[in-house]
Image 1 (cartoon, rainbow, N blue to C red):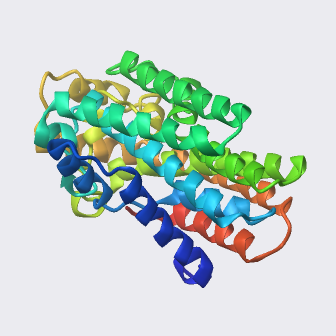
Image 2: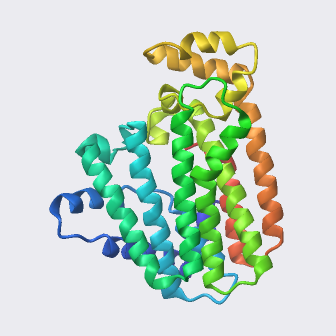
Length: 322
């Protein structure tokens, strides 16, 4: 059963409230910024991070207004990281739409990312403790470190699996872990419960990013909302390619990767070699290992409909095709 079909009416209402809160929080009288924000807010997205805030809070004393506030702040933080990520990657498309930097230019994208970050900390300063605010700041720092690490290792054909896993933990998994733990703490969950939720968020985030990287080799642009092969074209070598480079396909892969410019046939050749080398299969095995850990994390939680939704989201993420 799809995870969405398990959402209770109150969860659906909460997610609608998060979207409405985001729109209100990002209102600005600056016309250009308003146009950019409206595109971002309406561009869709899975909204998994605010959903994790909401679901995690349901294992404690749920306080709706406070949790909606926190969930919206977490999603705006995610939006900010995407805007800056697209600047670094010079990405033309995200979610099937032109990125901020490709439509309005890098200067406007920087201003927009900064506006989003400042909005996040303005919202959080009203609702969280100093300890929680420190945790948010720590995660933002780690996301930045992950981005810099990725930038430093562009076009590095010797990048290790360990380095890759550390990078995606900082870039992706830490924010999922924060989403879970900040909701649980705000709801007053016991330490064993919020530790289990934090661990689930971390393991889920690892699954989510590894599958995302696999889809760069398997998916189609219409499904992904971005060009397939975009990562390795930009010199970002992810787990399937890292594994493939450690096989007999290394030299033919290097023949393509070392080109100054790729054409469509080069992209397809890399994808075919990565698949033939077993890179996708090995990467999916690692994702499954993290998924198994996430299941063990969930087992430590009380049995309720929110636990079942989290498990369904995990299963969908393992099997997703876009």
